[in-house]
Length: 244
Image (cartoon, rainbow, N blue to C red; front, side, top):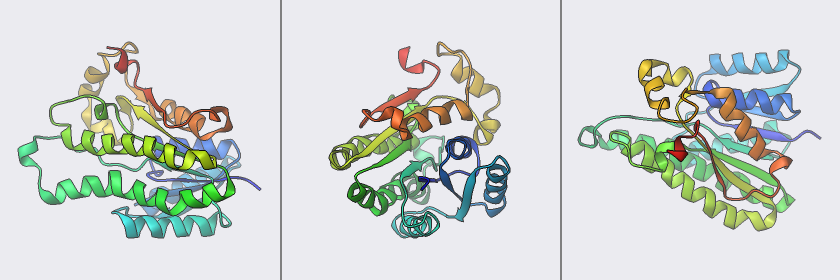
């Protein structure tokens, strides 16, 4: 029986690349995102390449939406989800004084509450089976201060701490929980940054932005048996930004 992987934010960027790689490695992938058109495009591409995939539309806003997505993924996965990749996220940039309450809540609903309640819905069953892998996608600005990135960074810093807490909670039962921390990455979502993305990346040893596929390869590694002794780790995939 193939493993089932649920990937949030899988209709574009890092999430899509992760779904395609996991499918290529023989997993049945549940592609989740807001856009049905983009989701079905990803599913068709995976199936055309010989993989197995289904799409579930989800507007992740916290507990109820997360639990609904988990239930649908379990249904499509034959009663089991073996890998959860929390890739969906929003990355606002701007002055603290211009942040609204609604904007603040939206960031934490998507970046923190949704992963929290997806783990709450799926990890206990993984623990009962004695196996499972959860990979959270964070960001390098969860690790250091950057003007205008406080809200995004704070939400992802919460996810870093949750990664370690969940590793301690579920690891003894065979569920590995880890995170990938991307640096500047060229995706549909960062296309509007233009040359500023290159300038941000220039400060690292790699001297360039990463690609969605490069980040996805790290996610897939942590989700695989090759990382069987890795628990609670936050893997920087940032072109060496952590080194400078």
